[in-house]
Structure formats: structure tokens, C-alpha cells
Length: 108
Image 1: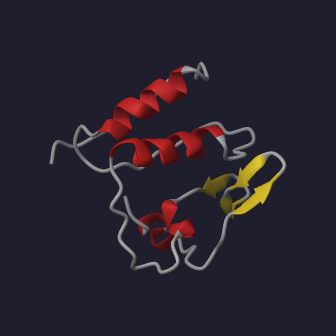
Image 2: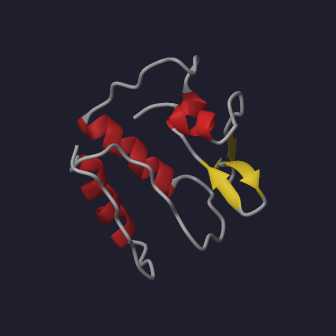
């Protein structure tokens, strides 16, 4: 819901790029890449006030249109609670037949 991941990972000012295989995530290390709405904002202090279909559409794009390459793990940081993102992520990932999933959430 906000641009906190680039800041937490020391990636402020980085940009995502479009390639023939989709969006290219930003690499922190050779084995760790990141995608965030924070890379798409004009100003890192801009709030992201999206709900419903628009937010779920971006979640789907991050899962479908980002060229993640071969990854052993996918960590998705979502807001606390039981919002639509959790349901959407589970539905979108189910179509990819993952080996497993762990969902951790807090009830704020």
C-alpha cells in the first residue's frame, strides 16, 4: 500500500524497466529481487490510496507480468488484516501450481 519496500531495502531512486519478457524487478543481490509500487511513484512520499479492482489489478500484474525468472521463494508484503489482497494473491498463485505457500498475517 505504500512505497516502504524500496526505502527498507535501500533501493530508493531505482526504477523498473520493461523488457520483452515483462517488467524487470530491481535486484538487491544476485538472488534477491524486489517489485514495489514505490518504484512507480513520482515522489517517494506520495500515498497510495487504491482499493478494490485497481489494487487487485496491480497485484495480479506483479505476479503475472514481472519477469521473476527462477525463484525459490516469493515473499509478498501486504497490509495487516484480512483484506482482498490476501484472497487475490492466493487465487492468482493457485493457477501457477506452487509447491506450497505460507501466509502470515496479523489481525490489526
